[in-house]
Length: 127
Image (cartoon, rainbow, N blue to C red):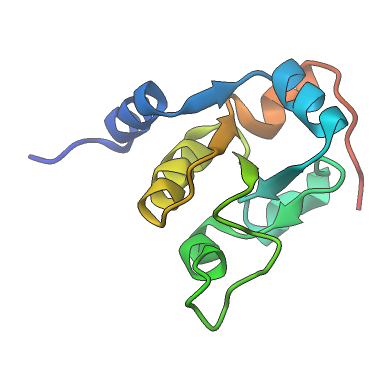
């Protein structure tokens, strides 16, 4: 294999983006004005989610985040604070880069993802 591994791509992404701890995400959510986006696949939601998160599977993120797309979700605004999370932080780190490329300027991710959120004892919303 001559390209980069996914682990290398995730590590490079994390070196260029805003990586937040569960406590930092909780504080931003408490302050309001944040769009929290869960990029996990639908079956993963059975284990719970962070309350108030908008679900946008990673595979559809760019389509839902682009205001010019017929699939655009108005909850995702390029001028708003957006925090992404996945199960453990890899997909959300790569997704932050994609949103940057779409013109989002105030975007971050929950480092360690939903697993880190749960491990920190933060509240989980069950389906």
